[in-house]
Length: 239
Image (cartoon, rainbow, N blue to C red; front, top):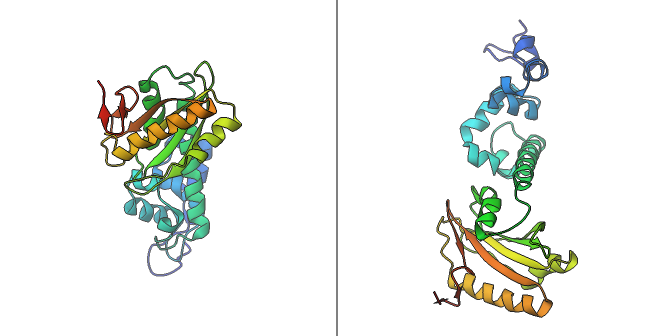
């Protein structure tokens, strides 16, 4: 055995072939690998007296699954042995996997028929976010989804939605109507006064442009609120 020092440190290449993550992936498939081993493949190589598998263990001990999925490059670089290159690969891989999964799920909903359709379309995207995201769903005359456009990302309690940025993609892609959608990280989807005022302002702007604002959906923790369905504008409830 090629000992690098007095401890039991082993490089990946010092392990038997059947224990090397890449070789296991090739011969046995991804299901045979632990999260630690999958992450080790992304990391590639170790640091000083830690191999890639041990570095992966450090990362998984530092972040929960939810935290890791949303971790930034800077946050990952706080783990000793993880530099810009390794952190960038991890973030890119995790976000690519998330996007592909969302794309597959979203293909199941191609037409918006109700506010519940909007909730089912967007709930997973917002499920672990700790910031407000404002997204506009563009629709054609048959309510088929043309695209979803991220307009802005705010802080923990608020987001800024500029009418010009909201309607710009709708005009460019010839949308017949739009649905406004944002999340409340607090988990409570009850609209604020600003939410109601913004809905009214954008509805009026849409009338001028000939683009109908069908609804404004606010998504919380396992529930949502439709401002249009509840007929709430400027703090008024006309049920």
